Amino acid sequence: MIFSESNQEIAKALVAAWGNIQTPKHNTDVTVKTKSGGSYSFTYTDLDGIFTAVRDLFKENGLSIIQDAYTLTDGSGPSVVSVTTMFIHQSGEWVKSEPLRVPASPNMQDLGGQITYMKRYSLSAMLGIATEKDDDGNVAAGNEIEFQPKKLTEAQVKRLFAIANSKGFSVADVKKSIVQDYRKTDAMDLTKKEYDELCERLEKAGKEQIDAK
Image (cartoon, rainbow, N blue to C red; front, side, top):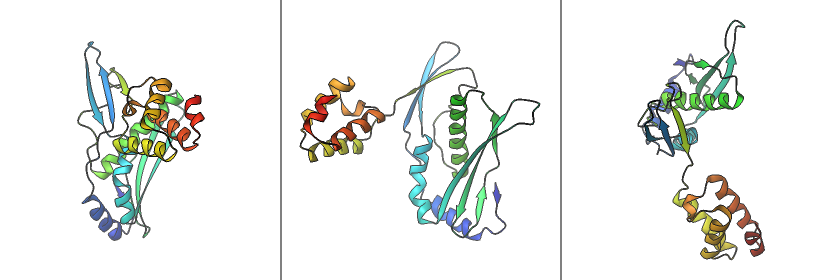
């Protein structure tokens, strides 16, 4: 890691913040299909989950996080994608990671996945926290992975029914919509996109709107 010339204030802030960081909950499920034909599953914490775990503690201690992603090429070989993570203190002091680099995918969607993956590893390494029980670098090993949709939290489900209640909808009304519109039997089975859509429809109110889809 690279520190600013003066680092006394950021050192104190990082010690205070790190001492209170809890290991983030795993919020993403992955199924790996190995080259030999077998499969296994594991869970890990995605990038958003890491930010959620540290955001309040960093704010309390005058710290912020900046991550930079860019590609490099010398014209003689494949491009390289590089990611760095920096912690900045309100005093102006900072600490920055060494660049994390891998060959850049020519496919833009795959490149975006690489960047997200690298940001997660760079940030968790800087924070000194574990975000998975197993290694999820299976694509590099030639294995096929399937990301499972994240489950809603109990708080999100409670919010859904609270919105419905405030607009005069019953629990039965909401469950009927979940079954008819999303082919799901329980609110917990909704994807985040479906959940956001249903909340928006409820917030716009009007009984005819929840039945209209």
